[in-house]
Image: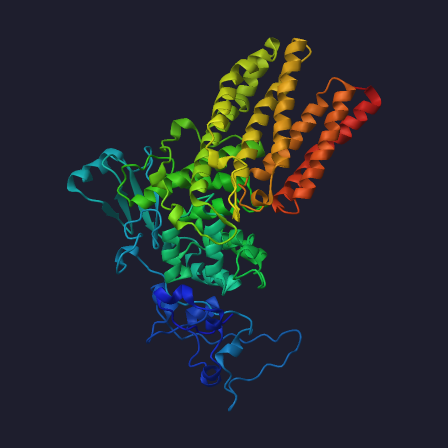
Length: 617
């Protein structure tokens, strides 16, 4: 598809343009003709051949290749509809360039991306970046790789930061032995398609790209700060072509969920989200071969879609994160301060994704404490503060979001302890060996974890309490609270599974009463959710957490010893489904929770029904 040439934008004026700036100049379009045919490379790519001031063209110059005109054009294929095409080569029929493309295709910027941030003129956050370079990518050198660390240490005396190795380079990042092998992007799979893919993504949302980015940073970013706002905006101000394609698409995809929360967008037609998703996942398969911090950012954001959670993608991201050294302590690395904070936030976001993915998918966790050196987050690791907050209706509070993210990490560390203590293959085998001791063996091991959960909840900052709402602001605290109840339920599920007739009846009763109390608290929390909660950003595991509450009701139902108790839990399950169905009108992710419950509890309902008809309680 050929796009009409766009007017040039002055960076400082870029974000002030109006919709009118995308309308073609009528007088110019009547006289502007196709001055020359595209070069061979652009013809093969089926992309627009742009020339600024003499050859080579823009794309050939960017890819450092010869700009030639040897190949003949391919014969045009007639459309099946038989529509008449004007012969633009006929005398007197010079068609304007705008006629070459569908009239509704919006124009996008054609600026070339920066080839090397180190050569940028003027101030830039990206000049000394390690993990977001535009022309190459880095992988950390492991202790058992072919590069011997003692040899690398010899260069420290020479104060050398990078050591050339063929087309690549070794970059030393600290005074110990941490180093990265930096490789050129150009040698990786489908690298030459990045600009075309970015243009396709930007075209889907044009001319609303900037408005969607504003929407993302207003609502999603405060509660899930895996981007650096100033870095992102600096790059977008120059051109959309500086991004990793799936990252740009992921930001747009998430922002589309709050389209109606923008006064500039609410009354306009919404872009095609499905097309963005296709482009995002297609390009994700390419960029994993040149991993950068933006690769992790893209994957984490795609996992936050209502139907985007994927254990295979989570697994892939953890491997890429280890390639990038996110599991290491970067406190003393020779990198910009902002990147140090970003690396820590991304590392902990990966940690959360691994542990919650392990819970909801029932899979072994990939990250272990023996290979985890990341320091806890502090205020210096978050570049935004209350002064950066957007006052438009429906925005999210920046400082509350920061606290929320940190508390979610603390809760996830407790979840990791629950999983490693009770839900690994080894721990379950150990539990089976102690089956003759009854539930007391499980209770002894659960005691310290239960105390940790109790203390975490008691020390929760006031700003994260469910009743702490600010007028005309969205509040994401709900995802933290449903996660807390999911951890509590996960602990009690293990206890209920080990209850048997060999246990003391009083102890059995106490355990079931405690489980019932947790269920009652969880349902009361869900009933308390307000529109400000439901309409906000919810973490990817949230839908599973809501479904796990339904699973817990089913477990209490199937393990009930009395018919009356069983009927009570059956009624609770029906009430819970109805509650979620009503709330799902305001929250798409709850529809997914209902679908999962229909699959998981539907089998239980049929099984219990048959059992009770044939055998009694």
